[in-house]
Image (tube, rainbow, N blue to C red; front, side):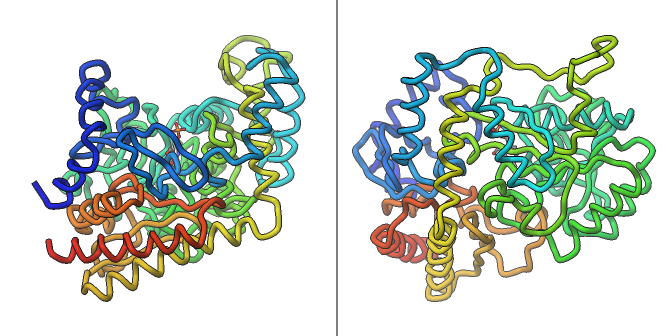
Length: 447
Ligand SMILES: Cc1ncc(COP(=O)(O)O)c(C=O)c1O
């Protein structure tokens, strides 16, 4: 066992014990596969602001932030107050009927997000992308979906293709194969999914043109996994080729929405898709999914005046539009609108990025830090990184070691995944983070 793992086991014995119990009751001892990592996940018991505390009473500065949603940090007073007020004033958690907060949030999105003329609410990001793709099929009367290799759109069948395919079975770089990302995936999904190479505009155009008669939608994370940016002009090319061929362009902004400013990546890069999927931040730390877009497309869901069930896109959900969640989301947006909020969140990220770059240089580690706004990753390679294949070729062993050492030194991250910052992170947090980064780099240089 590596030094990092040995230290980790020593620091987190109660988590190890709980994980063993948990694994007898829940497959893998977790409720989402992303939550598992070796040697075992850390079990947390409380959190406040930028800090999270585990069951062994270790306190960490949290740069995982529930894998992104907690842009204001844990339990921001404005969010907690909004939830309490909503519960107290309404006397319930849910109505199961329309209510005014839905209108308020839809109006906010309409105002903030360029493509969001009409909106529907759901309970998770996966629902948002799944429904956006179904509407695209209904709207275009076509079947196939194109997605980019290495991009993640949630746990449903249509998105479980080529998310992290083994490179030896992924096909040519400029014509990737559709590779199953899950046992149990029907073959017809692979047959109806076209996989595109991110940041290769010419090949993307060629593949879309070749499949244009069958393609209902192209879905993309405008910034892959929240940290890999599109090359200059790439999103514009995609917009043009989809528009010319009447293919619905869906931006999955579940990561970038409200982390690339209030208008998301579409406003930041100046490219407006037809539909957008949102989640994470917009729920204020409670479960949510949102899809929105052009009225002409979104209206296909409306049951008003439908001639038959198959005449309209079916979208439903018992918990859709939960008022408690919308109150938390609206409160979050109000805090983000305050002058200086994004500046602080992004400044914290800039400082951490710089500390990592400095530490890698000092310890002669062949590594780089990629990402802007409040999301980033470090990759242990000095090669130019522009897509999933470049990421997959980086040294993941060193990366996981570095991340485990961060955890060992009081900085919580999900090993191997994107780091996030929040409004709650402080200068004092930065000081401790710099020390952890230095220690983690030093230990990783010994591998
Ligand atoms: C870009 C992207 N799309 C979709 C999803 C799925 O969202 P959820 O986990 O809420 O289903 C995620 C989750 O990490 C995501 O990052």
